[in-house]
Length: 415
Ligand code: ATP
Ligand code: MG
Image 1 (cartoon, rainbow, N blue to C red):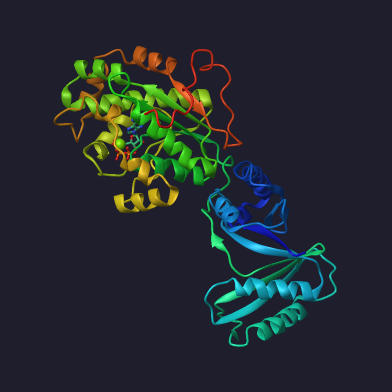
Image 2: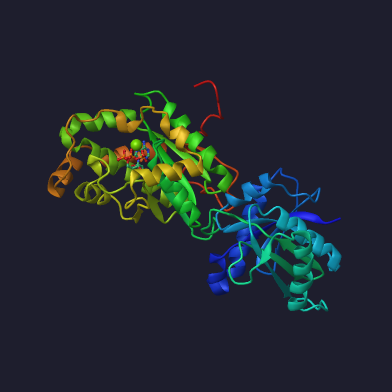
């Protein structure tokens, strides 16, 4: 019986020279984790592709859709796998072309890899081409600019046949670019920023600052929803939550009104940097976009950035809100971000925030409260929740573990 399987194509990995097998192995590991419980029989590397086979030998569009969300996947084809018998692979080619949607012209592209199959690819092109012309008499062959190309690929005793492929998210397999701590709110921007660095292969450890106990914990649940939505791509290892309400009140009493937000942000970055060091993460990530809101001027970015030594990545710095919203739709966080909840950013807000902070005044305000003790205390009281979908994530040993409780388990509906 001809088998249906998913063939995974990747292109960037091919560019990585000697690292290629590390990257391929990581992608195989990540696919195993992403497809757990989906009846997968094997995931194997075959001649520049990864083949995902299922127990009932009938891979589906749904499986292909799950695979397409995994970083490192450029395209996925729902392919046929058959033997070397030409009537078998011709029949598969007819089925594959029949499923390729609207088209008027086609061509066949036969390839042989590591095989001593007696037929040459030119001969195979002719044999399969003749079968397709017979099955689709209205359609024309166009070898230069066909609407559809039917691929017939012979590899070690098997033939893989497919005509269509759907795009994956691209990027690099998670775990090939180290670890980052991302500052996550439930707004539109930071979930997208998190996803973008995750797509480039970074393991993401989001940190959310909530207004608890001065606000309800709704924003914490929304952030968990965001992470749940991102989970199928396998980019998030653990979510940290920092209850920040009390400390914000202290800051708001100690510093000039206009500089409050900058002080909150400096504390947030320092706490995130401390968590990053415990986690072995090498950079912080925010969802800032230049000039989007008053606090995102170059002066204010500099005033906040000065508080940390670690690089702060801002993948959305040049993006427009429309682009960010479009991406939020694609990655499934849009509806969550539409729900508003007070978090630390809505608490103790000044009526007129400073938009062009001067560093001298920022540093004076910074010295007007005991920020070191505050950061220490906040780090001691972080809470977290682990997410099993990221196979490369390793939790820090020591440091945090002794002091902290896990976030209570998912309480959907109780919010
Ligand atoms: P977002 O849509 O991500 O909430 P924003 O447009 O609301 O961003 P700001 O409020 O200025 O912009 O936040 C800038 C960045 O600071 C956010 O993208 C995020 O990385 C970080 N940040 C904001 N609020 C929080 C929070 N409560 N916890 C953790 N990080 C936060
Ligand atoms: Mg926000």
